[in-house]
Image (tube, rainbow, N blue to C red; front, top):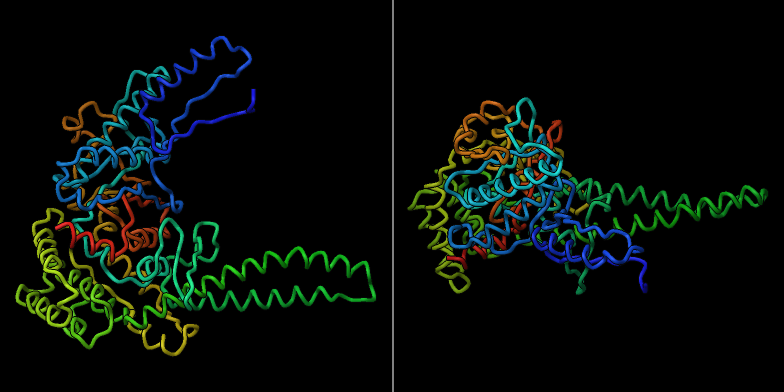
Length: 508
């Protein structure tokens, strides 16, 4: 009687048996209360965080460490599968026609998740079928069902360790970007800005290269200042016509707050860009970016004492080159390690080099080598940015956007190629990855049949077990920018390169 309405919300998902028991208890308690309306109990499937329309994370920490020994933590498999199941229900529902197929590499952590996810989706489909009076799930033919592609971070560590050039990736790398809130320091003060879908400038430019974003920021800020000047000029009006002057003044007063707010937010982005640029220049990050893209003689120079950049920048470069197949011989790798020890001995632990050797061995025996073939890159190098940086941020213009896009796609060979092959049902990836169909009573007995009846996929979730990164997400969206297909990128957690490096070193 005191409240017109009340709600009970669980901070983490309650199991269905708990919700059903709660519903029965409520129904029994309210049987005698005829005046009280029926109370619904909903499972909202919210065990994931949607950062953008095509980007989500489960926010589960330490999944990379678990990936090293997935059989030892059944609870982690349950958490990841449940979170991904919630995302699938929200995106595709549990109807038979939209029930996704599941692909994963055999023998990996993602396969453990895939098996449990398939079971959960199968149970959801059966519940929905029984409620609607159906006779149960069956193989669906002649329909373009979506696909869930599960990948493993351990199969492609290099992509997430690389130095990048897009606005969002750099904000995550050199500043701090977490759950769409960017925090940074400058001029002795701390700042923060929420950069989500409501931020028009960030939505348009988050995936663009830093030089292009700086130019766009300068142009937009100039245009806004001119618009504000025109609006303020109109408030003076024409004194000879009071009625027209009043109308003009009212219009101007209505437009001015929106312009001022836009300018304020754009100035905040200018501050972020300035903070990023100062770190890019002081650490000479374009040189690291360029060295990671191709085998270059300056690798040893960058690892030496005269090169700028932090010890972590140098370790990331060495990890990227050491992991890639055919890039560094064992002798060259040993020479690089010795050089780093001589220059930065006190700042390095032995576990860093052990982690590098372990990662190198892991990639050399990976069963997904079809995804790791070298991809040639064309276009301008990011190093051009450095010389322009010293001339002033507003002059940082790199006209080869297509070249930047090709570099992005190339750097995410695993995710981009896996999505392309598995959506088109082609290539070695399609042949090697297991296929699970939640609508099949026994996927192992019907795996071949399912291969025969499905067609190419129009929609997909690309999910990275062990930690994802913005570079991967950008690569997928750029590759599909002019395609009718839709690919949503998800991950157990978003890791910036420094966090991934720390995890690799300390999880040894």
